[in-house]
Length: 209
Ligand SMILES: C[S@@+](CC[C@H](N)C(=O)[O-])C[C@H]1O[C@@H](n2cnc3c(N)ncnc32)[C@H](O)[C@@H]1O
Image (cartoon, rainbow, N blue to C red; front, side, top):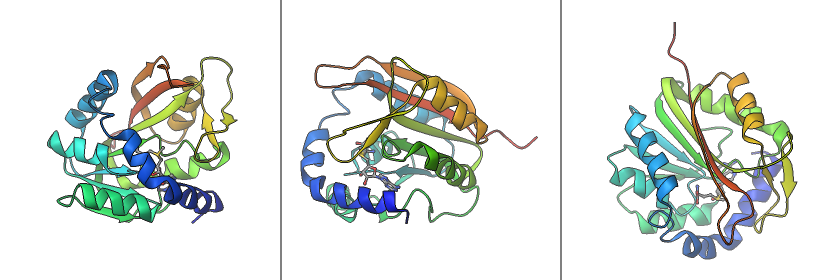
């Protein structure tokens, strides 16, 4: 586990219950994100990992859409909450830098606002692990805070622990340099209590040629 992951784990362990309360009802209140997630659910073929699943609300949502999905999170408290809320689904404590799956075994990865705390210099290693785990043709959906100006990722004082907002082009360039091909983006303007674009980047690991 990296030192960033150790810090992130401690930080999320201490706010897990509060976080679960905050995101309760999020899916129902987010029609644009829900539509983008529905497209992801339709495109994936095979098992999906919800990486950085938190209290499991999106794992549960993808399952309700018929996806064969399991959750992974570095925070044991989050995993305990996810297991309690969705006892019929599988959740494990684990790191996005070392997923416990065979090479090429996943049809999809959802990393919804779970790479936001990864320092930019460490993100390529995470993307390499996602690429290893996905089958050719597998989709990766990255949820992130989008910047409206500038060209560099920028740290900010996220309430849990330092996070980064990214210009979508800069993030997409990095992801594509690590073996993926872009499919689509969502960039919803910040709502009342939000500071940044609420973004998702959908990419695919190309089929073998
Ligand atoms: C902002 S929350 C997002 C939770 C959920 N995906 C959502 O959209 O509400 C970030 C989650 O990612 C997890 N996380 C952060 N870094 C991680 C890592 N390196 N490996 C696994 N989980 C991680 C945190 O513990 C936390 O539960």
